[in-house]
Length: 355
Image 1 (tube, one colour):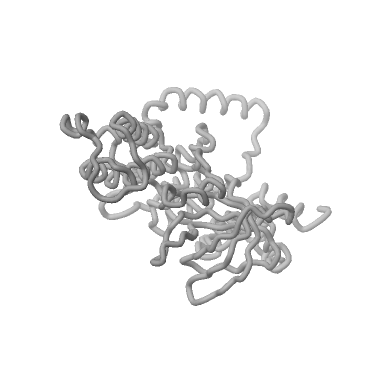
Image 2 (spheres, rainbow, N blue to C red):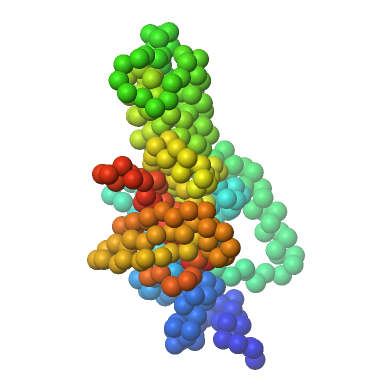
């Protein structure tokens, strides 16, 4: 007999007893609402029993508790496909591959979307789609498992070019950095003295900054690229170069917990906030002065005070969605830096999860 309900749930999950799993876990939802594994197990059972709404609630909650969990990511991506939100599913699969480039289900998910997404939306090939659901490991014998691994390895090697091409095609669309070229006139005369500016660049520095931003953008280091683009737009660079910098800045990706190679600290931003306008940051802290209104929440983030040892600074946070914050519970906030009408900067929250 299982020692606790989760042990029994794991056993039912391995045996794919979805109805029994739902019957066991549903009455315990209030007890285990903060347990990510519980939510993945229940969400998976809902998904296999075609309760898409229930699955969505479980996987979204699991993601907010543990955004690194691949099973909750797979479940949420499958839910988005079932709901016709192919763009959101693509983003999840791409983020999974950025975190683990050999994730087979993420690659298969992108291939499924590439083949089944057209002008009329997604063709819901339920049988194929079910293979993308989070699932327990197959109960194969040792010999059969070895044979399967060999066969899969051969298929992967054979299809690698196709899969990589599918990943590239399914990645969030963006203009190629190479498309933003400076003309000969701009290269010869990249700076001027007209208008107001905060940074003074030499001709060599202006050209180097533009090229650096392009390189960072091509390498998908969007936040670092945006800092360099802001530097150009706040400098004595010519109006035409600033226009190209502004155009390139429009193509930065939405920041994500899984894809932020460049992370800027509060001290960096506080020193030169204009340089970080629109840049994504990921900061931990303790929420205070929480104000809730319909469809939004505003609070002060006590940065670095999540362990109540060191307060680095305080900044306002605004969300465009409802969220219930637990008093005195640390949070990690993913947000873009924005400025209000008075010129003060704040965090425009993209996502948040409690520690």
